[in-house]
Image: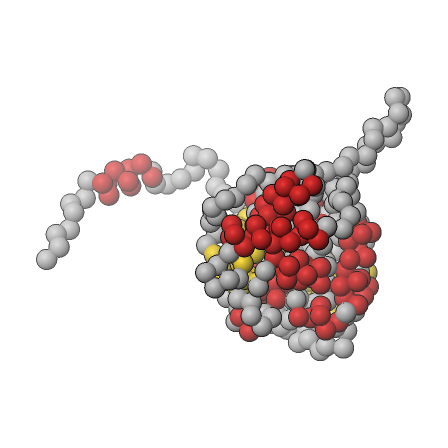
Length: 352
């Protein structure tokens, strides 16, 4: 794992084993808003469910990147996850001419790649200010910046060797549709690698806000955006036409002085709530109650509070005749049953 020096002073980055569980974990509430159905007899195809306001998300990223110094101070989570995405790309023993990064932000992937991996990185993001935040920074790999919405890809079919994405796709309304576009844009035997926030991300904050709102306001509202579940990604990749798919789960925990600093950092990251039917400002009384509940339920002995970021990683390949395929059923030359039986009948070695 990367050094904790990348984090802000006073924060610690900890790795937790995949699929860990935490006490006091409450059920996740998912919120979505669907457009009204078309009139009777209409030939209009219903639009995709709109969970997130993409324009709001763009403005949030613009606002976050406009304060360059503060924005750089909160790059720690995105830099760490980008490093882990690049680590998976390193496992592919292939030199790419061009790699496209969707939702690149200021260039988190670019910090960790070199010319042995690719000749050029195309950074794509819908926020121009975020995309150009570090335009004066020199990277080892040449980069090209393009303003692109991840929901509407401009790349021709069979034109890309590799597509990567780090902590961006959890804001896409039509995730299956985006995966299908990526698959179509890849060349045969092209690869897609992504990391995105999973459903257990910030469950401590979600629980604390729900309890505080229930106590102070008599109800709850969608303060934390809904996110994907690891059990769904494999089927989504297959549905999009990918083969040789891989999905794994990791967790990153960051300790903060209090829930207030956590929410401030999320805003500075451009990761504020963008659900369409979200409420407005969080009342001060509710916010203070949530911070107290957070510390009481999840606080560390040293007075800090942990924030869990669940990261879902997925890898998929576009089908190609050159890819290795499993042998047809019945073509095996040896029986696994006979092998296991022979090993079971073997004498147990004596220990001296």
